[in-house]
Amino acid sequence: MRLAARLPILTSLRGYRRAWLPRDLTAGVLIVALAIPLSMGMAELAGMPPVAGLYSCILPLVAYAFFGSSPQLVVALDASTAAMLGAAVAPLAGGDPLRYAALAGGLTLLTGIVLLVAGAARLGLIADFLSEPVLLGYQAGLALVVTAGQLPRLFGVTVQAESTLGQYWELVVGLGDPQPWSAALGIAALLIVLLTRRLWPVAPGALVALVLGAAAVFAFDLESAGVAVLGEIPSGLPPLGVPDVSWGDLRQLLPAAAAIALLAAADTLVSSRVFAARGRYAVDADRDLVGLGAANAVSALSGGIATSASAARTAVAESVGSRTQVAGLTAAALMVVVLLVLTGPLAYVPVAVLAAIVVAAVLRLIDLKALRTLWRVRRVELVIALAALAGVVAVGLLQGVVIAMGLSLLDFLWRTSSPHDAVLGRAPGRGGFHDTTRVRDAAAVPGTLVYRFDAPLFYANAERFRSRVLRLVGRHPGTRFVVLDASPIADIDVTAGRMLGELQEQLGADGVRLVVAAAVGRVYDLLVGDELKVDFTAGDMYDTIGEALSAERGRPAPAADDA
Image (cartoon, rainbow, N blue to C red; front, top):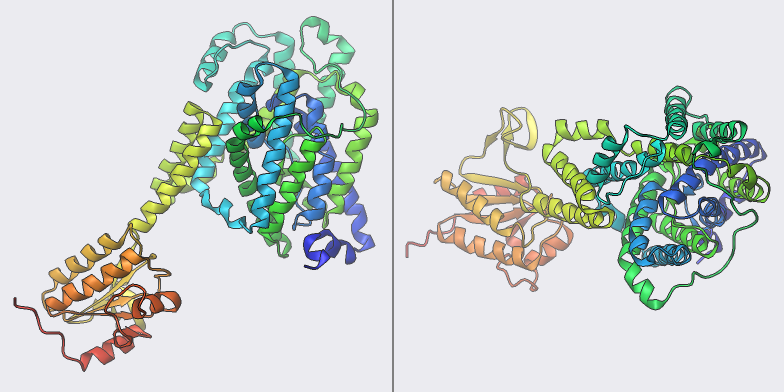
């Protein structure tokens, strides 16, 4: 394989233009401005020291820039992966911060390995198995769970409940006695971030809130007034090393790693496609998985935690004209500078401000507009989204992923086992054959049932197909021919193939002939071949519906079996 195929950055750099450099450098500065507060907040959400969030913005950016296929995508800490990492690691750490950090690193490394294997095995399509309604519900549920955990920090109150609903209840009860300065700083920071996002989307509102909050603590000595702050943050480059975990730990973490990898892959591949469509360039899902896997692997080896795509930071970079991976590389270099010289001032950042930044970030996960669209277009999908939301809130994040995947599978099975079908007919003045329920003047062909089934035929819908055809034939006693329009049928399994053979015999016994039109490729081969042992021959197969009708008019219908 050519080196450029393994390292897509080489293609970008080969055609790099000097005029792009100022825009890429500007984008790098903006990425860091967003990354400092958000990464520290997400690290806190994951239960890790804030500096781990900064570590996650160096080598992971470099790794994805070299191995990912998108020249624009920015990887970063994400609320979904951070919250899930914390939920998976906390029960195993036993309250030991060193073991917690080691397990978080082990889980991140394992996530990277899962993604690398998936990319090497060309499994980029696997992320498509989480449907949009399920993702909408999961993300909204995640936002509610994360907000429940962050609001007490924002208001300076203590809650003991572990369940999300219990946390909200205790928060309501405890709001009568907040820490006043923490609450004031938290609310002010939340307003700054939300208003900046609305009025000036490109501005780093989170960074402004962080700087003002730290300045207020320093200037008015608010720490002595009871405001919780981050405290000392280690300066210097990230520590390099393999996480100190056992094989037993890795076995316990594997399910969580698979869940985090799936969510990160879904988010990354969708974001990659969106920006590729806007920029009119091609991306490779499998290379993106490799890039994301490499980013997570090096994050684990450099004190960071699990990363995913950041659509927000990518959009900010795009808004100033960034075109290539140079923006991400610039951001990584600037983050090194931050770690070397700016960790001192970060010690004054109020915990309430970081909580506000996290809350503002996760509120964007609740897409009310998309949920309203589901209500208007297909309400069963809204039910699926709400079920995923309820599962996350009631059961937990990791279990919520399992519920979400199960709902995706059930949705798929329901759609394919009960697909749309149609009786086709001719319409005056219009060519071809049309759904008689959708085209008002389309009429069925006398003595013939032209039937279309809009899904692959397989074990879950084979009997529904049979009963539907028999019911339609029974409603029209004069039917002599049944023409199956197979153009939407992309595949047939053994169960469905045998059902078609049995249906042909069953109809033939009643004097009705079953033929197939527009079957192509493997479907045609299976029906006329020897694999399924059915009685279809080349004489039962036609290229078009019209050809089938013309040929069958001149052929006598099979005699009814009076026995």
